[in-house]
Length: 146
Image (cartoon, rainbow, N blue to C red; front, side, top):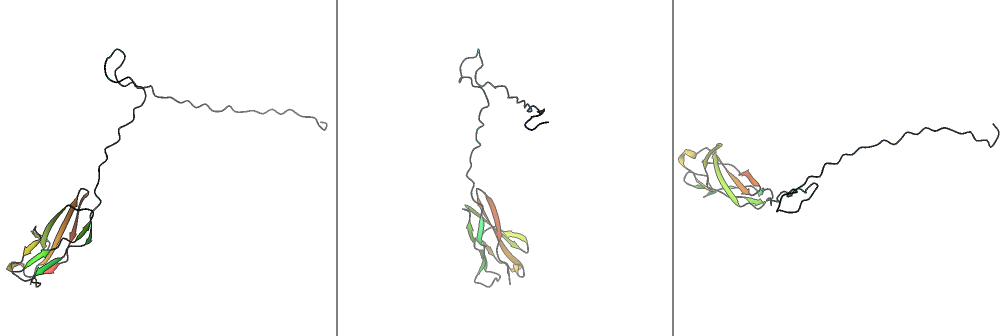
């Protein structure tokens, strides 16, 4: 071959792949031909309705747990234990009290009067705070009746 001669080159090309796309058939809504009344007929997918939005209260959290206090501060028979509710965040709208003596429920108010049979028992108060988001229980300190 002499300088400057060009040799033809054969190049095979592969055709681009074809992609088939099938579209859904339009879905008529509203009255069909021959029917009367109602909104005009529209075709195609209809937007879904958004779910309703509900305000949810924030979770409840105790910043300071409940405290059992005794009047006159001796935890003795004849005195009354009082359960403070503690300090809460999360917009609680209700509080429930549960007194436990040795793990057994013995009362459901903020106050518990100590009786002769309570001597030697360990007391704690559980406060349950509730809001629209749920409820949370927190247990107080424990005291022993003497």
